[in-house]
Length: 571
Image 1 (cartoon, rainbow, N blue to C red):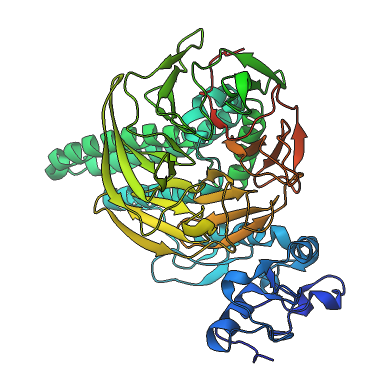
Image 2: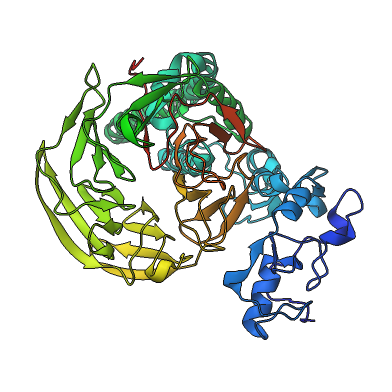
C-alpha cells in the first residue's frame, strides 16, 4: 500500500460532509473521500492526484491488486464521481463562518464566489485580512486608515483612479459570463434599462456631491487673490477630468454593476435574455448518396430542422471553417474540391471554390489563426495518414496555393484542433499502425515548433469537439476498444481534466457546436454501427444531465456543423 501523500491536494476530509459517506467512496491512499476518482481495470478506485503520485514515486502497479498500471491506462470512475458529485459538503471557508453545504459538483463555483473568502483591505497601511463580503463596508466605514474626504485635487484624482482600478478588477471577475456578452450587449440593452437607470441615478448623486465639494473648494481658493490664476488652471483641468470620468463611469455602468450583488442581478437578467437569442445551427453532409450532399438548419425559435439547398459535391469527413462571412467546406473522402456558402447572402447558395486541393484528404482539421488558415493532418488518398501542417492561402474568392509548412512528430487523423491565444492545440486522433493517441501537441505558428502538453486521460479519436472559454470539450469518440458517450473538458492552459455528465447515447464520427453556452451534439454512429439522426444538448454551468432536441431530417455522420451569426433569418 502506498504511503499517504502530504505534498499535494488529495481527497475531501470526511468531516466536511453533511451526512455519512459510503465506505466505497474512500481513497485507500489518502483515506479521504475521493476527488476526481480514477480506477484500474479491476475497478479499484483512488483520487486522481493520489494514484498518479503513487505511480510516479512507486512501482507502476495498482496499490490493491498489484496488477500493472500506468497513468495512461487509468480510467475515470464515472459512476463514483457522479455519486460523489451529489453529496453535500461544507465550504472551504467554513472555518471563516460560511454556513453553506453545497453539492460537491458545485463546490468550486461556490468557493470562487463565496462571501467568506479572505481578502486584504486595500487602504494604504492597513492590509487587514477580512471576509470578501465585508470588504466595502470595512474599507469605507470601519477601517482606521480609510480615505477621509479631502479638498486636495490630487487626492480627488487619485480617489477616482483607484475607483477605476477597482472596477477594472471587477470586470476581470466577470469572465464567468459568456465571452459573447460584449458582442451582444447592445442587443439586450432595453432589458437592462431599468437597472442602468437606477445605477445612473446613484452615480449622478455621487458626481453631484463631488461637484458641490469642488464648488466649495473653488470659493475658498478664490479668497486668495495671489493664487487665483493657479486656481483657474487647476479648476479647468479638474472639471475636464471630471467630465471624462463621468462619461467613462456611465459607459462602464452599462457593462457592469458597482458591487458583487449587482453583478449577480445583471448576470441573471442578461442570461434570461440570452437564452431567447441562441444562434441557429447549420449541419451539412452525412450518409451516402443524396443525403451526403444535403444540408439543414436548426431554428431555436421554431425548435425544428429545416432543409436548405444541397451542395454540388459529396464531402464525407471534411473539415470546415468560417472566414469573411463565408462557410468553407474542405475536402473529404475521395474529394479534392472546396465549396463555400455566403452566410450573409440570401437565398443560401453553395458555390464551388475555384481551386482544388492538391490531394484528396479526409479526417483532417482546419483552423483560422489570425489571417492564416491551417490544414492539419488527415488521411491523404494513396499515401495514408498525414503528419503535414499546411497553409491554405485565400484572398477574396481565389485560392492561390496550399503551402506545406512543417511536419508533426507523428501522423494523425480523426483528431481535434483549436486556436488558443497565439498557439494551436492538437488533440488525440489515430496515429501509426492504427494506434489511438492520448497525446496533446502545442503548435507555435510563428516558429513552426511543437511542445508536448499534458495528455488526455485516455486515447481518443473520431470525437466531436467544441471550445468553451479556455476549455476544450471532447465528446464521445473511440478509445481504441469501444465507442464512448463520455464528455471530458481539457483546460487549455494547464491541461487539467474535468469530467462532465455523459451523453445519452454512445457516438463517434459525430459533430458538435456550442451556441450561447449550450453544447449541441448531432448524429454520428453508435456502438452497433447504426448511423444516427438524434440530437442532444447540455447547458454549461447549469445542466446536470443531457436532454434530447428534435431529431434531424436525415441520418448523418462524418458531417460538418457551424453556428450561424445571430440576427439573420434563415428559415
